Image 1 (tube, one colour):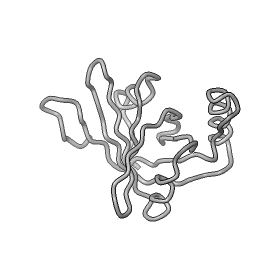
Image 2: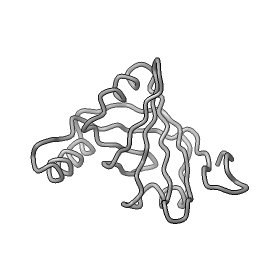
Image 3: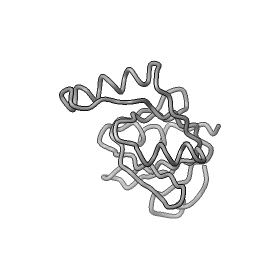
Length: 132
C-alpha cells in the first residue's frame, strides 16, 4: 500500500471534486462517483449504480481513480486494488447518504474499499506523469 500525502488527500476529499473510477475486463469502463471518502489510507466508494464496475473488479480487482480540482487543475490518478464489501461501517454510511440523496428511492448495495498502490500526478506542468 502506498501512503497518500496531504496534497493528494486534500484533492480527494474536497466535496466539490468528482472522482472517476476506471476498471476493465474485455473493454475499459469509467464512471463518476459521488459517494466517496478517504479513511485510514484507503479510498472508499459507495456502490449504488456500479454494475459493470463490480463485474470488472470480480474479474481482476484492478481500479484507477482519477480526481482533479477544477479550479487549480491539480490532479492525481490513484491505481490500486479494490474489494467489494456488503456490510460494515462503510456500507452503513453510504446507505444513509444514498437514501437521503435519493429520498429512499435508491440505496447503497455495498462499498468498494480501494488499497492505493501507485499515485501519478496529472496536474499540468513539469511534474505531470510523475509517480509519487
